[in-house]
Image (cartoon, rainbow, N blue to C red; front, side, top):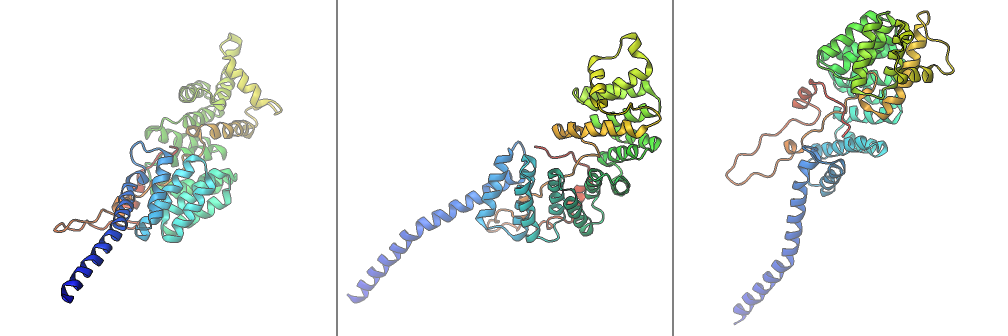
Length: 360
């Protein structure tokens, strides 16, 4: 009887444990489901909104079930989303965390530099790009970005050197060619600048900024018809681009169109606005024209990223969490091949293709 009683008591105890354990198992299952479902939106694929990406990456991070490499990617991906939203302080904190988890993660260093650059902290941006380049001397995108930071500090010679390196590393980079075009124009190397702009446009660029810059170069070289054609192309892409209106108006004035009543009112207005309080820009003072156009373009670029000077800012594309943390394999199935750690191997190969600025 005692033996039977013991069995009954043991059965009751086991039953109680099972009943207690069921909610825990269900909770764990729910956490795992949430964790796995957050991977794809955290990667930012498809039409995922910025807020949805941030929420998904946050869920992945808070689950604390990923590898160190996967967590570093999640912080990087969320940082990119914060940068795209203009919340630079949160972005920088995420990139800091990503780097703390993976000190050799070059993308996180580059992306932290982009956040500093857009925040207006140019020296800190340069330092972040320095770190990325030290980790990967062949990182063309970081050279393009550092050149952009040097341009913001009016250090045109260093910017030109970085664009040279970017072009050596990525000969098909539209951003590098267009950025060096603008930099050489600032340095007064008009013919070399013209060749760079031509190369950027031949590679498929339709950027208003490239046409605008080439228009300025033609204007400075006295080729007024070519300047007007380029300014027209720039204005088709960005109708409110004041620097193109200014340049086209000045080119028409130089051509003598005003006497024939062919200068558009908007062109004249742009010329008057940009020359107000300035000396007359003429062929004896080319820097005055460049300064007038550049000063206005900074304002336009703040409103519309597609007309930024100095090429695009490379916010490095997110690594794919699915590559790092694949769902567990089923019994009898072969384990998935382990992917390279972030910032190396296939990720570096993907960098070789020039990218548009992520402003989603």
